[in-house]
Length: 96
Figure 1 (tube, one colour):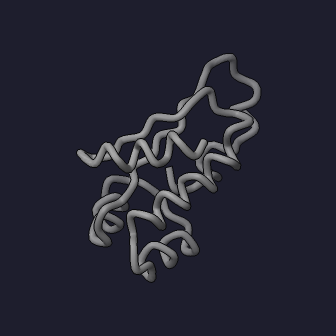
Figure 2: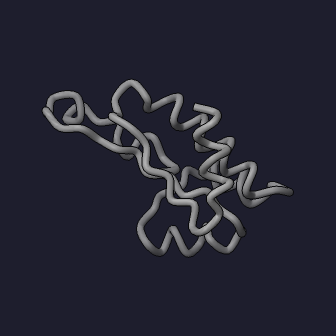
Figure 3: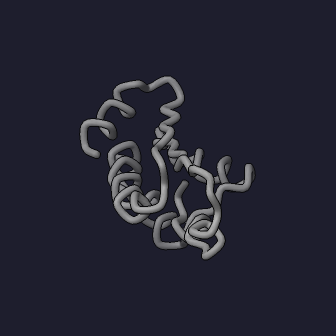
């Protein structure tokens, strides 16, 4: 999830189900384009932050924590997919 608007919908509050927010910490800038081709939406602001970052791993973690702070009121939990870099998941989990 790199776009809060994708789940900030009125119908989310009206349903009786639980939502998990899924996050993939990025390791390399080319992953942005790959994820977009897979249908993951990035706001232009987030995309710019990631592309202009000197350390995309830490910037993506920072963005994930910001987004989690915005969605935590209406998600049941989070699913972190660290793509083999478990230390990134650990960093995120220690910060929430």
